[in-house]
Each structure stands twice: as structure tokens, then as C-alpha cells.
Length: 317
Image: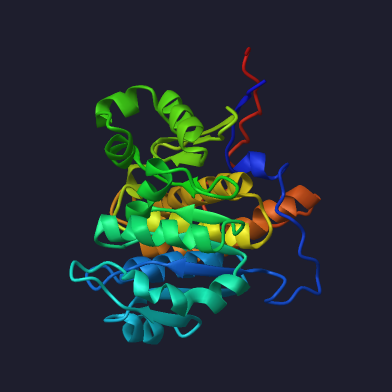
């Protein structure tokens, strides 16, 4: 029987991330491989990679366009960066797959798509990656999402992260029809694509292939800004690296992303903050949620820290 659950950051206190323990090291916190960026949008790789680290991942490798790889490495010295050969249109050439064998072997989760150009090349690259490591937890974002919607993929369901416009592009609907029935659109896509679908918006719906739904409401227009989706994708990857399932990682990513936006809106106003400014809010939020689950009194001196939990609800079906 499928279930429909409402959740927010408060709910996560009762759905804690897998425990790392006081003696954990960067290896036990997990490795993320981020395949992202392009010569026109190199910042997407940086936003996703930093978000994964802020979520608690131990190590992050970035594979990005050869033309900007050195710039990405200099901009964020915490990363190991791999430069990939590019197509004429600015995508990643399949010839670069062999450069990722070691990184794929060592990764605990792979994120593909933020800031990638040349949709056809991105889809081909994501499909080839999945065939190479079908068991590896995978998140397909932006231009790479068509890899899940076009052809059946081997291995367990991947997670795709469209907003309404991207969903309309992927399934041939209008954006208005997706917005009119977000739960139905996400559920149908999850079933047909055999994927976990996180349909983003003021109401975000996480749909599983077998019918379960997770629904989050956050009316924060400030999050509708360039790079915000890259941050969310990176957060999900970081939580997944810490051994959360893709569904739990998506729920944590969505709720923490929304709460970070609420905090910035409380200090700076409802609109005008940058996606990169969300990142500094994440560690204290995650720590606060973990401490609350353990029953510890932790004071985080930020506005809107005491938003109430939304109860878990079952549908009549």
C-alpha cells in the first residue's frame, strides 16, 4: 500500500542520518564523485561539490570540462579535479569515461549533470556511466536527467531532480499541467522511469517507483535563483555519501536547503541572497537537527530556528 507523508526539517529529527560515531574519519564519511560544469557554467560544479562537503561528505572529486578544470581546482583547493575532453558543443566526450574508472571505483555516490551543456552528450555520458557502475547510488540532475527518462537503466533506481519546467520537457507535458498536479506528475514519472523523482518547487514531491510520496512545502521565493538547484543536488549527494538511502538523502537535502533559505530570508530579506550563501548555513543546521534527535540542548543563534515539525500522515489508500 503506497503512503503519502508530509515532512519538514522537524520531521528529520525522527529520521536521523546513519551515525558516524566520534572516531569517524574522512573515509567513513563517504566519497562523492561530482560530474558537472562546463566552460560556460563552471560554477555549478563548485556549488555542488561544496554543498556535498557542507553536508558532511569526507571527500569530493569533481570531473569537469578540461577547459575549466584548473580554474575549478584553484577556486576550491579541497577538491581533486579531473579534466574531461569536450565535444564541440561543450559537453563531455565519451572518450573521457576511462579517466573516471578509479574515481567511480572509490566513490560511494555519483552526481551527474549540474551545469553540463549539450543535452545529448550529457545523456549519453550518464547512461554510459550507469552501465559501467550500475550498483553505485546515482543522482542525475539538469541535462543528465534524460538518461533516466528515455531508456531503462540497469541497477537500482537512480534519483532525478527536475523542477516543473524540466519535468515538462522530459515527459512532454506543459509546465502548467505539471504544476497543476505535481504529485501525479512525479508519481507517474517515478513509475515509468523506475526512478526516484524529486520534483522541486514551493511544494517539492519525492516519489518512489512503488508509489510512496514524500511532500515538503516551503514558500520561499528567494530559493528560485541561479545555482540553488546545484546546491540542493550537492546536499543530496553529501547525505547519500554518509550512507543515507537516496530517498532519505533527498528528504534531508530538500528540508535543509529550504531551512537555509528561511534563515537567509530572515536576515537579508525574502529575495536577493545568493545560492552560494546557502552553503554556510548547512553545517549548523545539520548539527542542530542531529542534536535535537539525541535530546541535547543546542542553541544556534539564527532566526527561524524553531519551526515546528509537520506530522507524518498516511493516505487513505
